[in-house]
Length: 138
Image (tube, rainbow, N blue to C red; front, side, top):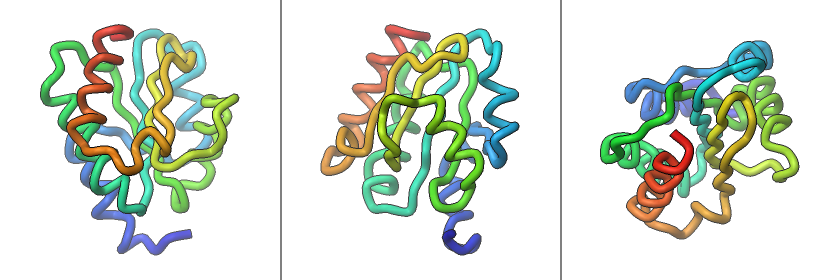
């Protein structure tokens, strides 16, 4: 588990842009079970690709897209352990990956961006990809 003082600033990058933190498995289940509409969940991380591409790319996409998910949420791998494990159950058959970005439609996984699709790519490329995803599913 990462220390809270390390994680809080990284969490705030998303929560300051309207993301709800899921802390427990119940938070995840209560939202996704029988949910109608779209939810973007970012599995946040302390790694450099989360700071350099994932978080900035998600924020750019939301700021530059006409279509957006109905709900924004985040869990933090290595900190919000219970919620992260539950989100990963919903993203099966994909293996655990952080950072990663999941779009759910009506409680079902519609699109998943794994770490290997984030790592080494610029934030603008992530944003452009997510805008295309939002246009298709939102």
